[in-house]
Image 1 (cartoon, rainbow, N blue to C red):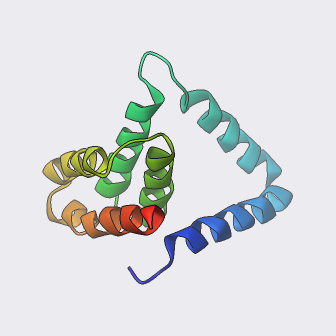
Image 2 (cartoon, helix red, strand yellow; image 1 turned 90 degrees about the vertical axis):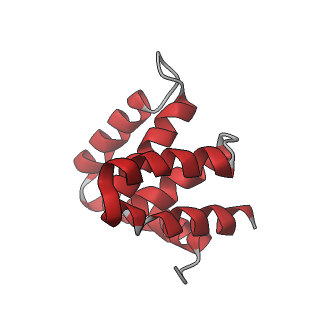
Length: 113
C-alpha cells in the first residue's frame, strides 16, 4: 500500500463534500444513519468501530478499513485491539480477508507516524 493514508482520508472528505452538492439526499441520509448508529449505546462506540474494521476486512473494502482504523485510533484503541478484531474477519472470511490484513497494519502504522 504505497498510498498515503492521511492524504487518502483528506481526499475522501473533499470528494464527499462535492458529492453533498450533487446528491444531498444520499449524503445527508447516509450521514444521519451513520451518526445515529455510530455512538455509544448498548454496544460501546469502540466496539462498533472494531466491528466496522472487521466488516471492512471481510468485505475487502479498503476505504472502509482506512476510515474505520482512523476512527479506532482516534478513540484510543490499540494496534493489537484493531488487529485482533481484523483477525476475526480473517477467521470468518478466509484467504480473501487475509489479503487485506496488510491494509490494516499499514494504515495503523501510517496514522501513528
